[in-house]
Image (cartoon, rainbow, N blue to C red; front, side):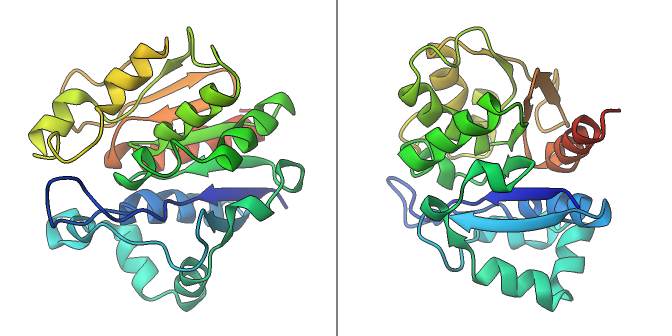
Length: 228
């Protein structure tokens, strides 16, 4: 049985607002059930352990996905989510791949987390895939800090500057993720129309642009693991 590690944010605060962020629920549940339905074992971790914060906007009716509804009736999944392990206590050799869901939280904590950056490099160095979606690719910033130049020339996708502006949060974040990744040398590719699904694959690195890309990014990871 293949084992997937999912790394979730522990950060909930936004800047210049009382609004909260955290994990975008569908970006966890969509990939989670892709992996479960493929017969994989999934382990959840976060920098602080325990239950990660959930972006309240992702729980609004208009953002609810089928996997969200499935999750609400899945006691095992809810228990796993409420009891995430500590990120600094896992090792890449125990898993076949790692997946980073988004929500705005990662641009604060996972972008700075040395353990996460080292973990990403360990997976890739061992020939194991790394996937991230929406703001999850912010975790690649920490990997680049551990290994300067890591992102140079990488083709990736991530939540775009245009999307950040359209959701009205560009003034509540410390930096625009697309801009930051491009400053580090990555080539960020996005859908022609904001909020449409878009996934990029560059070797062992799989990245998705936005919430709608979470399931497709997980499927791309499964295809890579299955050699299809």
